[in-house]
Image 1 (cartoon, helix red, strand yellow):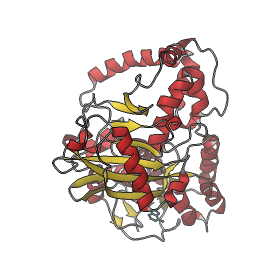
Image 2 (cartoon, helix red, strand yellow):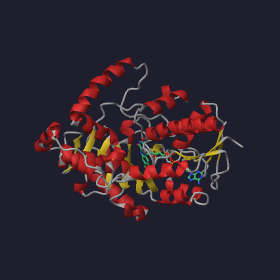
Image 3 (cartoon, protein in one colour):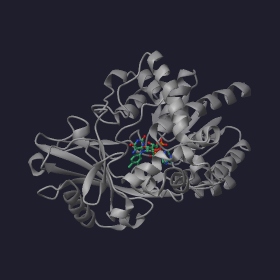
Image 4 (cartoon, helix red, strand yellow):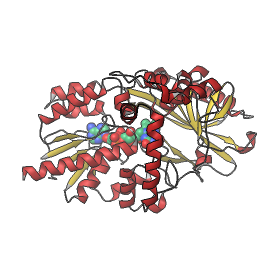
Amino acid sequence: MPEVLIIGAGISGLACAWRLKKLGIDTEIVEAATRAGGVIRTENINGYQIEWGPNSIQPAPAALKLIDEAGLWDDLLPPDPHAPRYIYLKGRLRKFPFGPLSLGGIARILAEPFIRSKSPKDESVRDFLVRRFGKQAHDRLAGPLFTGIYAADTGQLSMAAVLPRMLEMERDYGSLTAAMLRSFTRRRKRVETTKRRPRGFTLSFPLGMETLPARLAESLTIRYAVGDARIGMAPSTIITVPAYRAVDIVEKDCPDLARLLQNVRYSPIIVAASSLPEHSLKEPLSGFGFLVPREEGLHVLGTIFSSALFPGRAPDGRVLLTSFIGGSFEPHVLDWSDDQVWDVVGSELQRVLDSETKPDPVALVRHEHALPQYNIGHERWVASLNEQLQRRPGVFVTANFLEGASVPACIEQAERSAHRVAEFLRRKG
Ligand SMILES: Cc1cc2nc3c(=O)[nH]c(=O)nc-3n(C[C@H](O)[C@H](O)[C@H](O)COP(=O)(O)OP(=O)(O)OC[C@H]3O[C@@H](n4cnc5c(N)ncnc54)[C@H](O)[C@@H]3O)c2cc1C
């Protein structure tokens, strides 16, 4: 029997097992599916290389360290750091960040250092951003960003859980602009002294994001197609599965913990990959992609220009587009038929890109539970969860519904959990 049983072979479970192995601790992962990676999945269909989960990750320190240790540093693929991002507003694509703003909107952002109010308890992301930067900056920039990337309603999202650093900046410097200027000068010094740092704000791999979990899985012990793991099967257990699956794992032994896990809400997303002939566009596709503010009334939350961003993602002469629909504002789209989805995605993409034809469907995937929502009250919920876990020594949770849902955040949490587990085993002797 392994010292540590890890349930789930998504990036949280893999990164945790990897660190424990490095610390000399024997682990076994049990995974319900027949592959590792969880939502990180790259699929090749008819010459298109499609990401059904994350398309790229930010170069955060813990993620870079893991990538380096896994021997994947030289495979890192940064897109053009100058690739523009767009917001679709009033009939055309406008460059992020200033393109979608009016002069009044820009002036309101510049007035941020003069806003004297401080965040009240339990402020939402929307209230915070509107208060500091104005409604337009929220509605046309931050809102689409959170809805497009995290499938979230900023009016529900907890500022303290999602952007705690900004709250600290406001508290410590009275203004985010002042705080950013100070940290920018410090960061410049740090970057100059850092030996290895990839170019770019976001990264992938030539063969797609699945490269990372696949590489980690190669050197870990994983049993696949095991869906009935429970706590108590090993001296310590690390649960890394989504909350609604974790409920079954703990229900019998820790009903209070199960009740808490039942409270995690998820947003659904449909990822739709479609393609166009290059010649159907008036100009070659370039840039990261576009996001859509809610005021535009489209169903498409955003689209990544996958083949423009990374080479080799589409056959010659074609472009690959990865679009997202659903999220917390439109969960019902999950019930649409494929034909309905293609109808909407096709006509909206044709309109936004001003293409001669509607894009051809390639394939789509429905994520019923795409992303956990860090809503107001999240921190209190995490504190209650930790209280429950303290009553159950040997049971640990590291997952995307606790301290950040991005891949780098999952890796960072997994790293911390691995050290906590190592400490637990050391004390236990
Ligand atoms: C559409 C989409 C786009 C995203 N885009 C980005 C992005 O661009 N950048 C970014 O950084 N992040 C992005 N994310 C977020 C990020 O990919 C995820 O939060 C992260 O990969 C979650 O990893 P995880 O290991 O915590 O969970 P999961 O990937 O869900 O892994 C959990 C694993 O547990 C297994 N499992 C479930 N139940 C059991 C059981 N009973 N027993 C054993 N195994 C079980 C599952 O099969 C799965 O393999 C995106 C997410 C989605 C859905």
